[in-house]
Length: 101
Image: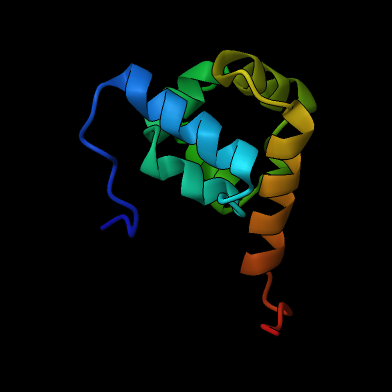
């Protein structure tokens, strides 16, 4: 089961909450976005099939293209570099040689 439960509120409100939390710096990893938007919604916004998105996210991060992050950023109206930095944090936190402070 996914450790993040999708909030059960209308999509417009979820998007607004997501934008606020991103602006406040309260989201520190890409996976935290899943609390607000489903993987299916994110994959669709990035013009990807869900299966491809999941494969890239979990096994092959190099499979993502910068353009896909820019598409997502445009849809949720945030800076694309913020999404890229969140994804980088996600990769680093899941790295086998990652050490917690």
